[in-house]
Amino acid sequence: MKFASLGSGSDGNALLISTVSGATHTTVMLDCGFAVRETERRLERLGVAPTDVTGIVVTHEHQDHVGGVFKFARRHRIPVWLSHGTYSAVRKQCDGVTLHFCRDGDRLVIGDLELFPYTVPHDAREPVQYVASDGRFKLGVLTDAGQSTPHLIKALGDCNALMLECNHDREMLAKSAYPPSLRQRIGGAYGHLSNDATSEILSAVDKSRLEIVIGAHLSQQNNTPELAHEALSRAVDSTSIEIVIACQEEGFDWVKIAG
Image (cartoon, rainbow, N blue to C red; front, side):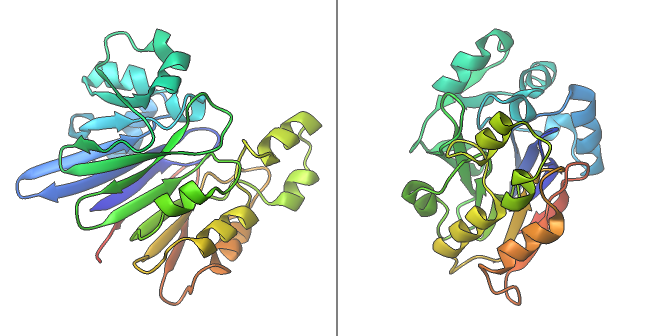
């Protein structure tokens, strides 16, 4: 099992999760916030053809996550999984796309991957994040959440790899040029996770099998890779658990979960 990011941030997000079983390859794309040609260009960088994508799974309807989903899916005839709430926000974009619906607690089987959606607090209609498994290894993903909950702490436990939002540094956000309403939204209970909040989440989850943690969805105005890395380092033993920071332009290259 391996995973890679096409890009992570407010200008667009897409994550690939892939596994091989015998002669069968399964690659799922989690969100697609890039235009079709840009998505194809970024896929090529990772050695993936659009026809290699088995399915697209959506977290919520904000454009940096869903902006390219339906055009890309329609062009390459790829099925899409999303919550009913997300569908209610994007239904006009869905013509000609094969849709499947999911909700918190469902078990989605896509090829040789299983995905488990779980609800998160975010200002969208029915936002979910996902834990993916190939039956041996688990990847937990958490972006676009305003606060920790016992539910998400439980969902992210016992993973081999975690990709966690480190959106902003609280002090940088407070001093930023953003208008007060935007600062309040980002830092609020249904906005985005700060470095400190993510560090607290990472401290609380079961890390008994954790090999690597990725800091993701960094604000280019209100955070730095160094601050995000420092916050994650406070929650793990960095001598045994690798820490990587995703970026907007390059995301990150393939990470293999070895066990």
